[in-house]
Length: 395
Image (tube, rainbow, N blue to C red):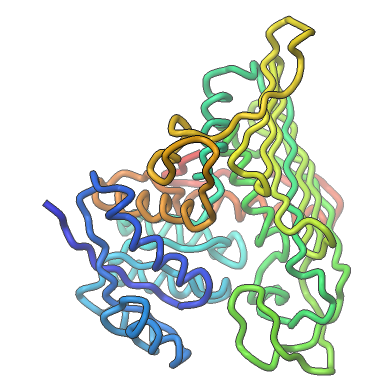
C-alpha cells in the first residue's frame, strides 16, 4: 500500500526547486518505501515563483509567508531552502510546529545557531536531514566501505580541497553570501563545511583540532539590481560595497585517532569550476576522488608486487551506494539532482522509521564547529579545539 506524505518547501530558488524534483523521484527510485510525496505547499515572497509553483511545479498551493506553510495541517515534512541567515528562524519555527525538516548547509550562520537548531530538534524528538549531498555519490560510498573494511590499512593522513570559480568575477553582485551576518563564515561555511563533513564521513573519525588561515581577495563588490537564483549574474550598481567574509581558507586538522588532514577552499579561483577532491592515505594503500569526475574512484591497494604498483580507476556500478537505482550499469552517470534524490529518500525514511539515516542536524552542527574553529584560528594564529556535539551523528 502506498502512503501519501505531505511536503512543504520553503523558498523556491535553485535549491528549493531541486528539493521539489527530488521528492518527485522517490516513488520511482525507492518503490519499497511505499510512499508518494504529495507537494502540498510552497512558500516564497516572490509572486512569480508562487505562480510557477502551482502552475508548473505541481504544488497544490503557495504562500507568501512560510509561517502559513508551517501551520498547514496537510504539511507533514518541510524542506528549508532559504538563504543562510533565515535558516535559524525557519528551523526553530518548524520545530515549534512539530515538523521534521530537511535543511541546507550551513545550517546556521555560526556554530551557536547550529547548536540551537540541533538541540531543539532532538528535544522535540524530530528527525532531520541536512544537504551534505556529496556523501551519496556512489564512489564516495565505495571509498567509505574500503576504509571501514581496512583495505587501506591504518589511515595516516587525508587531503581535501574545494576550489570553485563562482565568485571569481570581481563585478559579481554583492549578495547575502558576502555578509558575515547573513552568510556566515564565507568559503569556510559555504564550501569547506562540505569538505569537513565528507572527509569525516569517509574515514569514520572526528576532527578534534584545527589551525587555519584565510584571505579575502575581492574586497568590494557592486550590489545587484535584481533578484538572483543561485550564483546567477544580474545587472549591478556602479558603486561597490565591502565584502565581509573569506574568499579563501586553508586548514591543518588533527583527528581523534591521530589522522592528520589538510584542507583548502577557494571561491574566487580561475580555472576549476567545482574541483572538490578527497584523498585518503593509509599504511596499505590510498584512494582519490574528484567531484569533476565523480563517477570514478582511483584506488591503490599495496599487494607487494611492484610490477602492479599504480592506481586503478574504478567506475561506479550497482555495488556502490545507490547507483543501481538510477543507472543500469557502469559507464553511465548520476548527476547532482540524483544525489539529492538519495537525500530526499533518506529523509523520508528517517521520519517514517524513526531512525536517523540521513545526515542529521547534529552532523551540520559538527561541521559548523569546524568552520568556527577555522575562523577563530585564522584570527589569532593558534590551534583551536573542535567541541564535540550531542545527538545522532551519522559519521
